[in-house]
Image (cartoon, rainbow, N blue to C red):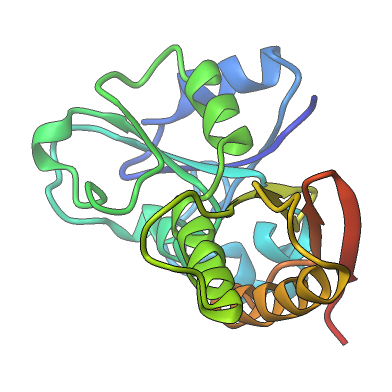
Length: 213
């Protein structure tokens, strides 16, 4: 599966090798800055339609960091945008001075051999959204604190959120419908940029296909 990967770097050419690896693996590499250009402004400020997060459904963001900076530089400003858009973030580089420690989906301590980490991050469940969906489901169904409970996994595919509720076999049709609507509303609050929200409850039956107005 070809991924759209937004590649960022904290200094010029830091991500050159990583970008080549991703292209060689068949993935599409997107950037926020012109190669060899100034760190400011980014593509989106110059021409809004050229912002990778506007022009493509970004599957994962990769920020490649040389060990010379403890704080984000202007060249990696797209990492903040990716996090706001709930795009999984992979950080490649020395972990000692990593400012994204609490936000990254994957971290590797080198700036090469990045393909596997990006692919894993793109396909992995988004933990923060899954926790919120599971929490909303418990509140909607008034589940007891003890005993097995349904849980939700949330992944991103082609810019849409896919929600899979596991353990929901015993739910009635009305409960499934109510849970699906509440989950969609909660996730839309957290991720207003998603192209849509699709929800399935075990046994896998699509219940909601929600798109922004």
